[in-house]
Structure formats: C-alpha cells, structure tokens
Image (cartoon, rainbow, N blue to C red; front, top):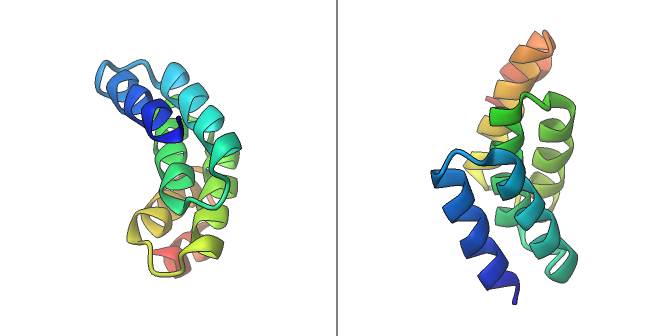
Length: 93
C-alpha cells in the first residue's frame, strides 16, 4: 500500500501537483515511517511549494534514518538558503 501511494505521489509530482504529491507522501509515511526516501521526496515536494520549514524537518528525518542519503542533504541545503540560514546550508551541502 505504501508503494502504491509513493507511485501516486510520483505521478502527482510529474504533473506539477506538488500539494497532492506531498499529501500522498504523508500517507505513505504513515504506513512506512522508517523509509527515508519518502521523507526526502516529500521534502522535494515542499521545496516546490516553498514550505521551507517543512523541507528542513523532512530532510532532517531522512538524514536521521539514512545518513548517506545525498538527496536529503541537498533538500536541506536548498531550504536553508531560502531561509537565509547560510551556515547550516553550507554544512548540509
């Protein structure tokens, strides 16, 4: 079921419906809360929605679950730049 929601989220993201994608990722996370890719992908959707605080939160969770997940660090760095937290962005990137 989580995989189906993830697929739906990916389709929504490709259709530029980032809010729907974030909602699908949230539902998938409820079913599979230890999957770091779901958090990183939701962070990417939140970047498109300019919800940068949520990006940092999701990226941090993804990093906690998988410290080598480059996508999570990129999302965090991007959000921190937008939040003018340049030192944190530098460390993340």
